[in-house]
Each structure stands twice: as structure tokens, then as C-alpha cells.
Length: 292
Image (cartoon, rainbow, N blue to C red):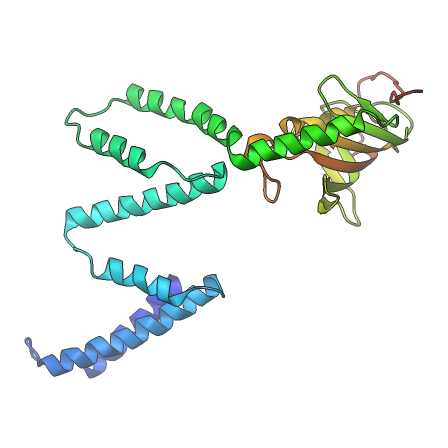
């Protein structure tokens, strides 16, 4: 937008020198020329901006949006509503992305219209009460999305197959892990920042994240529950493969490439605590491996 404004400002300066010093009520011919000049200027600038945002932009669709707004009623009330309508359009898009299904627009607009037309101002307590309804309803809706339901089923089937694998141990919470190396020393606690090498995989085996060449320090209070639980069963030098069900990973919300309710696999190696300060004594427990 700044680039467009800068281009427009440059164009205005040029027009000021060459075309705007005629008397008021200038000929339609000069206005036609001015209109064409501005059309060239804005079209070129907006084309650059749109292609810069998305190289695959559909210019015909973008032009429809430009014409719709540019030719709209410019009265103060209508323009105020137009701006609020753009916020609602963004809400629709955000809800569909987060919940995996579109909002019921007819019900939304029915309730919006009724609330908007009320003449009695809504108090702060009423606004807070309405807001408090949103979070649990949003969570419930995300849990009921087709992707969340499908991924939960896939995860349960995958975990069920692991129960016949004697190398895997299941915790009470529901994570399953296989010990590759027990490590030595004290178990980590949830107050530790632990240096970790890791690879994260989907249950189909494809990677979605990894630590790379350098270990990553993790605050165990700021990671997904299943990851934190696993590391607290480990010591420096431990290596495990852990399978974390969706409810102990990113849940129905998902996260940047992780779909709702996805069951995840991590190969984890712990190297030690990030900052070696005096630590409280911890239990010296060997990771219990199934059948050993």
C-alpha cells in the first residue's frame, strides 16, 4: 500500500504541473485525459502490488473486487458499513480455515441484524458474557470438523496397532514410546530447559520438523503435553521414538502444517540441561521398557 501511495503522490505532482492549472469547470476532454492518466498510474501500481503479494493472482477476479468497491455508494454511512463488512469477510475466512468448515452466514447475518438494530446500548457485562461463549463453542466446532474427526480415527487405529509391538510402552496418559538408549544421570523435570535433537513425523512417515545440525533448547512448560511428558521420563543421552496422540499434541486446533487432532511421531535425543545451575535432586529412574 505504501508503494501505491508513493506512486500516486508522484502522479499527483506531475498532474499538478501539467494539467491542474486550468480554470474551474475545465473541458470534459481534459478530464477524460486526466482519468486515463490516473487509470494507467493506478493500474500499473496495483498490478505490481498484487503480483508482489501472490504471483498466481487472478487479475480478472481482483478487478471485480476493485470495481465493486470503486463504484460503490460513497456516503459516510455506507462506507462505514463497507469497512465493517470487510472485517466480517475476514472473519468468515478465518473461521473456515480454523474450523475446516464454513460459517453459517445466514444465521450469522440474522443475529447480527437483530443485535445491530437494538436501540438499547449493550453493557460491558453483556459484551463479556457474549465473548465468554465463543471459546468453548469454537473448540467444540473444531472438534467436530471433518478433518479433526478423520485424523482422530486414523490416530486411534495407529495407536491400536502399536499395542501388539512388544518394543513400545504406553503411559497412563496415552503416549507410546520405544527406548533406543536409556541415557545416564538424573531425569529431567518440567522446570528444565532441555537441549534436544529431534525429528517430527506424521504417521505416514513424512517429516514436518527437525532440529537440524544444532540441538534445540525446549522449556518443558512451553511444549505440547506429550512431548513434555516424554522428556521427563528421559535422562541426558536418552534416545526414544515416541508416538503422541492428537489430544496430547496440538489438539483440534492443529498448528502450521499439523492438521487437527493429528497423531505425531518424534525421534528424540536429550543432550542435557541448557543452563547448568544448581538443580534439586531428582529421582534416578530407568525408563521402563515393555517386557524388560
